[in-house]
Length: 249
Image (cartoon, rainbow, N blue to C red; front, side, top):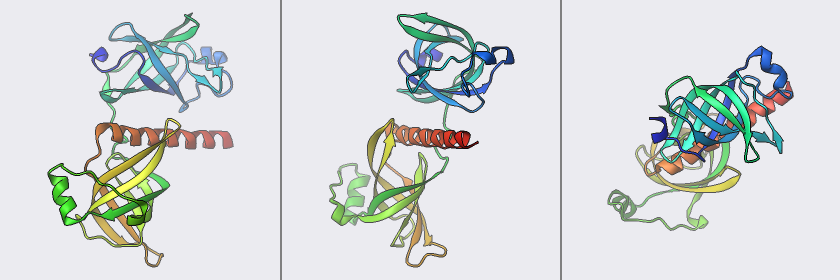
């Protein structure tokens, strides 16, 4: 059931897929254009087929999305990311809030499309190989890794997903080497620090660059909250790219 996974107050992203021509005059500029993404929150759940959400605001300005507009909804919940399709059925104001009534036109599904989608980026990171003792302790789940930056090698992440990353470093690593992998991401406007144990999948000389190696690592101990933060980072960065592309046209 919808209410088993989504609750009032949950954050959601609204991606426009189509809006009715007769209601296009309601829109201000590019608001509602196909592919635009807006941020909102769930206000109330009327039934399994109908919910209320807060009308999105951008730069202090209310975005008057049109009745009849079709949207893809992605919910950020305590149980993970979920997606469904919807149509705006009505708009009203209550308690100084502008509300959209959304009729759900598809079932709710677990959203995993970006979990293993590799997002190209340039991010500073630090890493080092685990010692045999640390590997044994990791297997027994009885270790916390304490490091200063002096013991870690600098590198650059060139793509990342909810399951792993590709990074460039000065060293070549044997396949299945266990690594301590550290980096930071801006999520919801705040820096989030990650300290993850990973396993090297491949390590090869970087084409055209002397003394540099391109490595793929699989995250081993990343919990669901950390994975969702990485997926949220990917969402936010893709949204920035779409906006820059739209603004340049």
